[in-house]
Length: 251
Figure 1: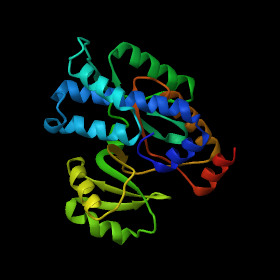
Figure 2 (figure 1 turned 135 degrees about the horizontal axis):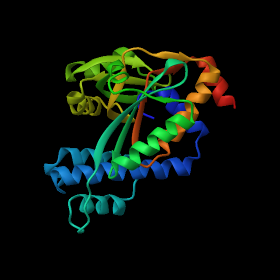
Figure 3 (figure 1 turned 45 degrees about the vertical axis):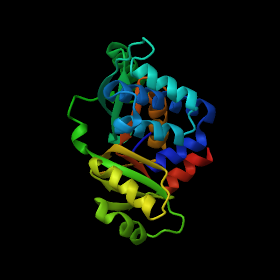
Figure 4 (figure 1 turned 180 degrees about the horizontal axis):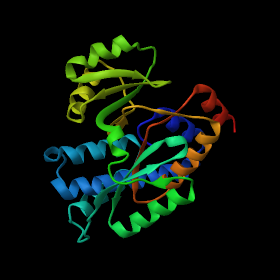
């Protein structure tokens, strides 16, 4: 899941790692194909493709897979890659909100599978616009604390367009406008600060605290959605206290 490191941490501890890794590979490959289709196979002349390839390499996607995806997306293999982006809105336990971002070559299949996963796991499909207004598109860079203070991070990235630095538990999160992501990455690199991820995400304007029962139901719902091949990202305003997180981790 994107957009909340607490959930990501909990999921990492509970996930079957190999299956999640294969799913992650598939999503990254799809992003490469789309970028190559839109801007061609030349990394130097296609910033979107260069970024998609960098992310894939950071996640250890094999170079052969990356090269094949570039050629397939650019139409050099004779295959046709035609994906459509779709966003679904849903409500989860205790009034939580979810945005489900899909990239699919079959809109009917995606709609059917997403609706089924939501209805079978305690969620409800929301009307368009009834959930999305709770979120704003932001650039989000996540980095391990490693002894760095909030002021250390701000000093490095403020002039690059950073709007705020948030404490998200084990990590710092830098929020910015999506268009400033590259400048912030460059500023961190120049300052010798390593970061874990950098994405344009949907960030909630306010969060909903879940109790343990709600958190369990929420995890089941998100797991079902993220298991779908067409689902690229799930964003949420759900949050949990440290006590709830500890209780989830202990199970």
